[in-house]
Image 1 (cartoon, rainbow, N blue to C red):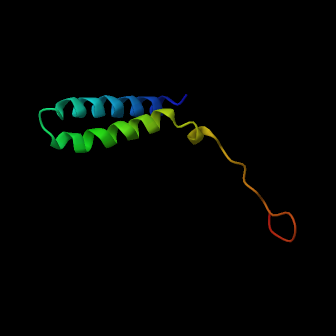
Image 2 (image 1 turned 45 degrees about the vertical axis):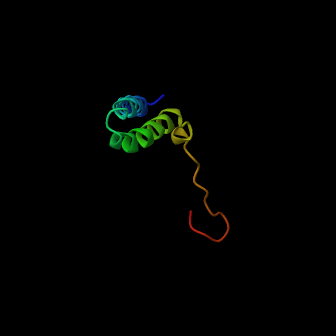
Image 3 (image 1 turned 120 degrees about the vertical axis):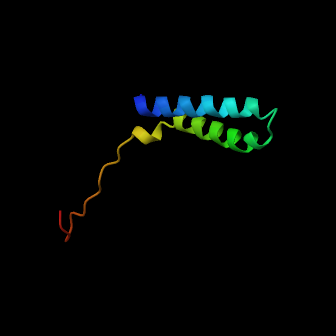
Length: 64
């Protein structure tokens, strides 16, 4: 697991939760807290980012 992805996702989730909790007192922070929480969860659990695709080369009549 990539350490930067784990750190970024965890910090985004914590920041989102803090903004949601403060959103009970200041409703404007809910606008920022919910999307940050969703993005943090997506960053933390995205496994496709680590996959490396092979480059397809043309073999017939093209340059290699």
